[in-house]
Amino acid sequence: METIKNYLEQMFANMPRTPEVLRAKQELLQMMEDKYNELISEGKTENEAVGTVISEFGNLDELADVLNIHQEIEQEHSLVESAPRRTLILDEVKDFLAFCVTRANGLALGVALIILSVNAPILFDAIHMTAVGVALMFLLILTAVAIFIIIAFNSQKWDYISKEPCNIDFATSNYISEAKEQFRSSYVAKITVGVLLCAASWIPVLVLSSIPSTSLGPTVGIVVLLIMVAVGVYLFVHAGTIMNSLNLLLKVNDRETVSGSYNENAVPHYNGKSGERIISIYWPTVRSIYLIWSFLTFQWWKTWIIWPVAGITYAIISSLLRDKSTDQA
Image (spheres, rainbow, N blue to C red):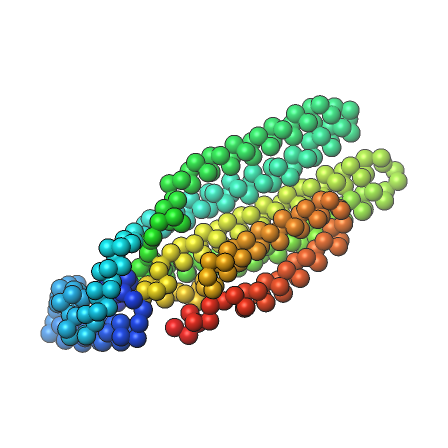
């Protein structure tokens, strides 16, 4: 019976999400269930029953009169002809998510290497080998740039997901939603640890600078600070990249069609492109402001306050920009 339900969802995926279509979808599901149960009671196997039901009720054009959705079917045909949508199958989505994990690892590592590269001249300057330190710094930066270029090149294979009209069926949408839910605890943990590392990174500087017996105390403190920040930012980038990829997949369906309601509660919708754009750049902007402010002032014991303030502000902005109509659909 689950196969029939998934097939039904696929049948209606590109239909306009109107009360008439939703009524017709429910009626057809009931007709399919009744026929399936009738066939099972006659001794048919599950596969035979599913095949018969799909062959009898699997064409919306033939059922237009029965369901009274002629106009909606014509609208669906017009929509498909004017803007054909590529259906992402489950295996395709799994391959994309596997690539997203690889991309997250690479991006996070590249950003961390850039932050850590500053340590090279600091350490080598302490032993009067500044030139070697500068050379090593540029080597680390070039390594990071090479990683970014490779990732950008490999990402081109998946550009169609964000640039072309696509859709996912009900079963695939559920798979993505479950994957997102499973990742949520890891996402929260990584963001939390990242914030704590960045917020506490000033402690080694304070402690080591207060030790009078060694002149390298401040230098070592700064090195440790940068290591802690690099690890924290690594966690930010890694978690954010994977979560953004999951959200991208959940938002590919056309919001005006039945498929647009698949797991819509998993990804809030916002009013207009400006609202979507504001939300998409909010946290990257906050992270950038935090890092710039922190590195310019080195007052990490103060700059951490940006995170609770940003969290409250995000809740307010998100509530104001959210499209309430999708909550009631």
